[in-house]
Image (tube, rainbow, N blue to C red; front, top):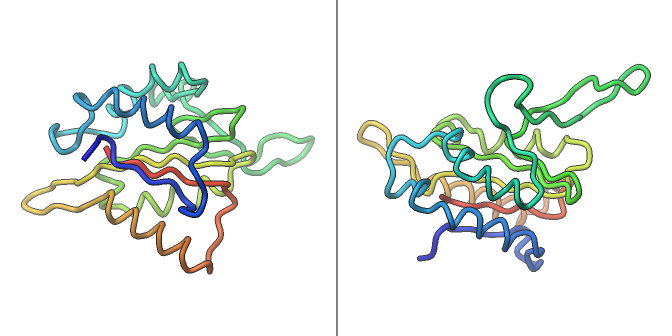
Length: 175
C-alpha cells in the first residue's frame, strides 16, 4: 500500500490537480510522520513536517500556538464589516479556498473529525477541506483505526445525501 492512504469525496468526481500535489507533500514526509512506524506523533509535529512543502504550494501554515502564528479564517462579520467570529485552522490556501486540518490522537478519541467538518463548512470562502488523520491510533492496550473510521463517516455522508457540505470536495488522507 502506498503512503499516504487517501480518498477524495465525492467519489463521483475526479480529484482536482491540487490533490496530487498535496498528497506528494505528505508522501515526501513518510519517514517522519507515518503513524504505523512512528510513536508519539502529535498534530503539531505532523504539521511541522508538512509546513515547508505546503508553503511551497501556496498555503499559509500555522507556525506555533502563539496568537500571531495561527491561521484565522472568518466565519461571521459584524458592525462595519469587522470580523465577529473566526476559526483557527492548521493551514489555508487563499486562492483555491482549501482548509487543512491535521488530527492525531484527539482525532480518534475526541470526535475532532466531526468538529473539523462542521467548523470548516462555516468558513467564508472554503471550497475544499483536506483532512489528515492517523492511519491508526494506539493508546493503552487499544487501537483505533482513525483513517478507516473517518472514511466510513464520509462515505456515509456522501452516499446518504441527507447531509450536504458546502465544499466542492473533501480530501481525506491517512498518515
